[in-house]
Image (cartoon, rainbow, N blue to C red):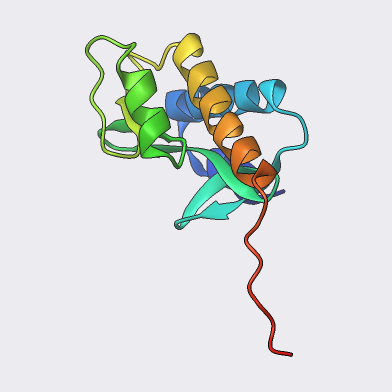
Length: 127
């Protein structure tokens, strides 16, 4: 088992079901995801970079796409959800809509693809 699977297995009841379902949905939308960590969170990684983490706490859950820009863009489409700079909060009683999760995943995937498509700056070598 990887970090994400272990994390989901450690959750109780309804939170385990919700977090597991959201992460499975992300896996369905992006091929070749790997499990790992980022910023101390169990995370799905795409092309070596963090794509999404979904964290559960006593007060609810938060989806982190590891991008303030993606978080802000998706939050603007939602009504009545709270957020931090980096994630959108929700609860078992009021889960994150599937379309919002899809937008988080697609937005972060596009950021990663764009960043990796940019040519790297070469540093001059001493000669």
